[in-house]
Image (cartoon, rainbow, N blue to C red; front, side):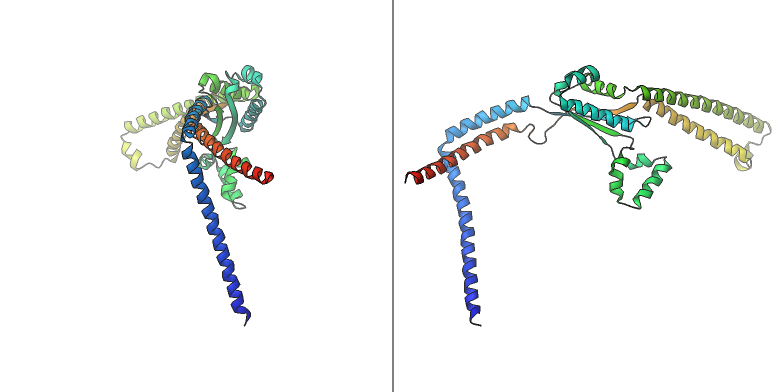
Length: 326
């Protein structure tokens, strides 16, 4: 019982000491801030000169050290996704190595020293991945039963099978289609193997379209003959209200399906004219992330910081020197 008041007193003393130390710490920070302000005020002319020089130098660096982002959205055809990724990886390795001979003579890039790293990533689109593809839909369902659907959608084995992929690269100056985009696309489409696959695939599509057109023509002839027969016997009302000819309904459905297929085949011919089909291109988007375009603000602040640090170092040096001399 006698120790309780002493413990309370010691705790109060400890708290008061901690409070004084914290207050002293913040007072010291405020004091040093005002010292820096007064120092800058006393050297206002030097500060002004440094600011002017810093802004001018930063503005020059912003003009000189520009960075532009470029994007190419592509669709690999004929199951060439792995081929596309390997070609981009090779291209990126040559850029890292600084192999300007390869980039200029093999790829055809006009200013290889101005191009930065290039990479490719899938554009996540589950709906297009499973659209009209029951196998893909069932695969997603099966995999989702054993794991997180978001991780499954984004993992490498799934994402590489998405129809569209985004190629991105940076340049240190404004570029053009002739300087970089077209050479890169031409390089990606250089494959004898996939060129043969493309040729045979397109031939198959065209043969299928010719066959479909022939069947549609025969169906139209049959329907015209049937209509003429009905009109001649004045039974056209029964065609609408009393039609029990299931074969006629099947013929009409077949024609609709063939017409739909022909439309899909025409779209195929548009998209399959290249092994790696470019669907959209965006170039010369100025990169303002990080320090890009901000040097006119950073350099002046850096100069002022150096001036303050030199002042602090000078004070510390004089203090240590006086201790040595004493």
